[in-house]
Image (cartoon, rainbow, N blue to C red; front, side, top):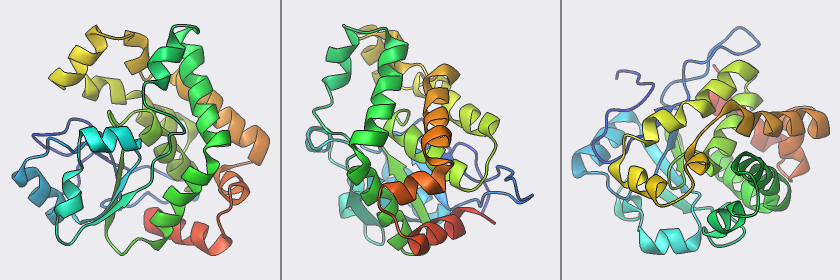
Length: 241
């Protein structure tokens, strides 16, 4: 099976493998272990078969309940793939756009990320516990556009395996270039605040600073939110060579 940085799918634009990153111990993150994704709602049958052949065994849905109701996840009914609802949003999804009118978009996005890390820690704990308990095979986690909530989970995973800060930021920053290939997202941008869809380095850098300053590293953060040592080791084993 070939390795893809971004998977060639028809119905999604931001499905990427977390494999191939060098780690501080001189190794590399595994291919076919984790996929970060945008909304799979429009995936074709061929896309779903491709993902299954790629090794997909678990899908973790990070969206809020209202998003799940509006755009049902196709993996709820796909045989052989475990579907897990694990929203890491404390309020309705329109919280972002309503708050953005009172703050600079950059400050608002960063505040939102930090809010998730601190106030939605029980939700994030569920995500990572689900990862630790997932059956062997690729785990795909996703939100709506695959940038914000998905970006936080991806950053924590890469940080946990000792991937460099530069690579973590680059992984996050590339999101915008993929999501604007989606005509639906282009319409959303036209009807909203464009900065909310950007994935600038300065949006994610304060998140990495917070984790390092307050918890030392990703493992310290995960232990703080309630993960056990064996769960963290299981997650590391899934991604780190």
